Length: 238
Image 1: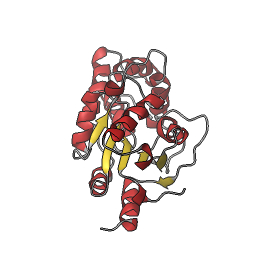
Image 2: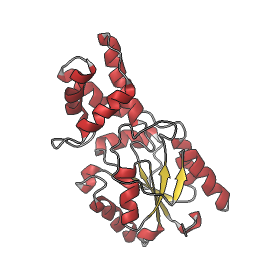
Image 3: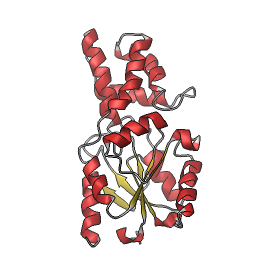
Image 4: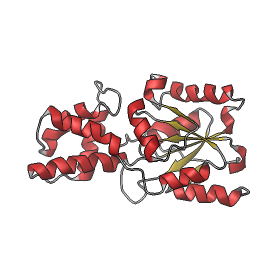
């Protein structure tokens, strides 16, 4: 790593999984449905089934796709069938919680950088997420805006063109994310500096996120957004 926090004008963020606790949101809704049906739901098992279903060839845009995903995984979890339950899982995205440190850390970081959201979620869901996070973003890019999902390089190129329109260059971006598969690996291949927020540091496996073919050593590595904000404030003038 040759860059310092002073070298960046922008921080770009994965949202779902880095700032918003989508695993807790999904397993929470499944557990609620299970309780109503008298079925206990194992959260990690549910996430493994979700991950497999989410990356089927017929997958649609997220989180609308959660209605389809429910139909795939419900029988394997012993949960009741019915479109109303799939809709409940999908619509629950509007109420997913931020990680406890996300909003405060973003507010601190916004004092030093322009913050840009990069999410594979649809615009309707991102608008809920942004409000939950305190609307800290200078700009936001969704699957609806780019027509593609990370780790497609074209998603990142949309952001590159945006910062160039503001007179900056891609090497002035620090990309912050929890997903090795969707963000850390591809950002390295595109020559970006990256920061891995290892949200599952106390848990085994990759949870609801697809496992990468290979691990990418990040430029910066923290286990929370608060730790990133602390490190930035310690290295930059107030």
